[in-house]
Length: 174
Image (cartoon, rainbow, N blue to C red; front, side, top):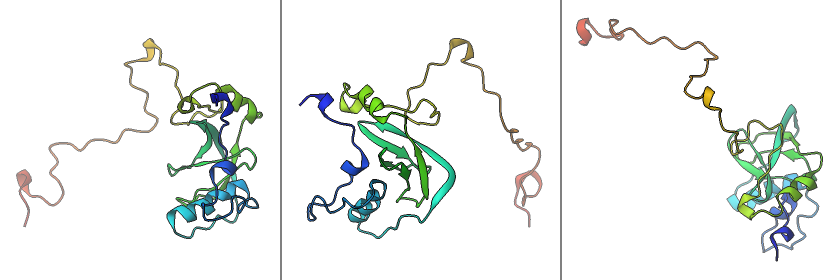
């Protein structure tokens, strides 16, 4: 089998019922919700998906090592699918958020098809927060200059002020 013949994995193919159940047992569960069933089965504890959508929240989907994933603000990630562009985290309970996929997900999959599985990575062009995204090198002229602080820098305590609760010269007070 050639590398090109191995498709990018999506949630509906990744989250499958355990071998003790029929292979089509989860076919009626929407792909974005299969992670919750899989998580229950793997962790052996009950979890319930959130009830509603988080308004105004969007998370970028990306291809990581040959599977569509989305990152939760808690640091967890789940396999997702363009066929059901929702995301909720069973780790922290983060509610349903809308996923942002490229306009043509198949084109992104085709762009990485000839790469080795561990090099099949793709990021949305507008996703600036992707932690594992390849970054452009910093130009030489900008190196070595500290960035301008965006918040005021806290003031250090003066050495002549004794810490609270101590007497003269730092000895404990009575």
